[in-house]
Image 1 (cartoon, rainbow, N blue to C red):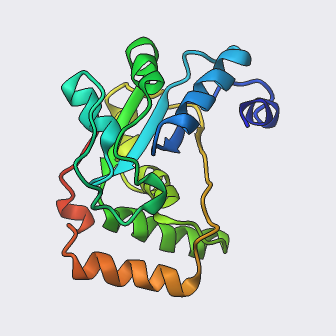
Image 2: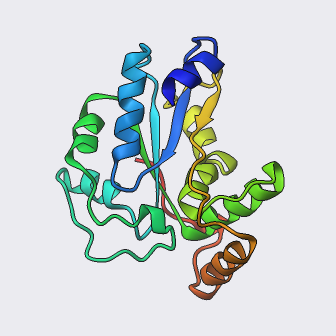
Length: 189
């Protein structure tokens, strides 16, 4: 995937790669690909939803943590424990952890379906929410990401998505009282 991005960007490094984190394998693969094309210092923005945030919990504990349960609707992120490799990478390269609500992830799924006419699951919606919302803008403002380079979002995870399922996810986040975007208190680490 990274070699294709390298080719598409004519070898010019992006400001960041944004991807969702479940068990950590995708982020580890992205890091390996970045190394292969000479982009080791390109930041990776690793996005999770609250209730499936085993990466953030492990960062906070400074060790691998197993979540007692998964409460997020982002089923593809429903991994109670991340791999140790992602924790090793976090200590040696620019990886930023972002945790967002299910509501923001689902809202991003809806917006993406309107913008691109393609359906994605909330796991992917989490990454899209980081870009549609203010998270990457905040990171640029605070110097964590370069302001003058494109941000690449890894958009994957649509096999379980349908219009009916998207409506059910919207109903679920409303029923569960997820915070609105204005009150979403999770952030960037």
